[in-house]
Image (cartoon, rainbow, N blue to C red):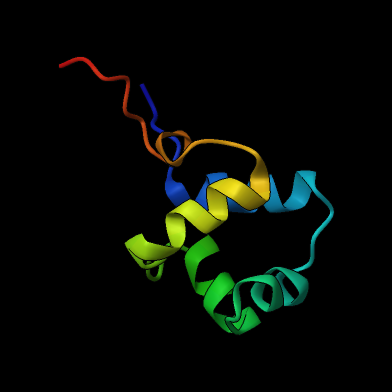
Length: 71
């Protein structure tokens, strides 16, 4: 089974909310280049930004991971 990456989820949430990389970066105080790198899986957002991402998209931090709470 193929797993959805954090990069794909960030891009999907951003696109679903019609937010450009520039506007998204500005909301977080980051450059659009940083957002682009996240979406290309070149790097990941700092863990301290995840709660802000979840709040912006109306989801939980766990939604960015394939975590179900069970092993």
